[in-house]
Amino acid sequence: MRELVPLFLRHLPPPWGLAARWWASVYHDTVSRLPEIQAPTLVMHGERDGTAPVGAAHLLAERIPDAELAIVPEAGHAFALEAPEETLRTCLEWLNRRAPIAPGEPRAGLVASAEPLTRALGLQIGALRTGRSLVAWGLGAVRRRERSDNRRPSSR
Image (cartoon, rainbow, N blue to C red):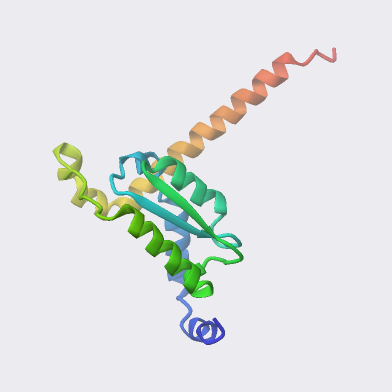
């Protein structure tokens, strides 16, 4: 890590790159599609990840069928660099338990034929989905508050 940090600092992304990364992380929402994943999945996450919450790894492992969760103790976002032996051991053990892994069913139908378009417009589609989710969340919060206000005795 001591050798890599100076390298990372010398190659910082430009501000527009950071903005694009932020935009993608906020607006790219595929949680509803996680149950469609057909491949056995190992979700690995650093216990002390300061970039992505550990709860996100739990969510992935819960929503992806046939997924296993491995939390790398004492490691952060770069767990593979911080704990390479633990990471390799965990991956190899998982692969050995799961081998051979069969291919999933090919995608077909309208969704599959639209995939090239959805790839090109993924960020915009994600922004719309997230916007819809935020509006639904906001409306739910307003309704909950209205219900709770209606239950309180009037101060008149």
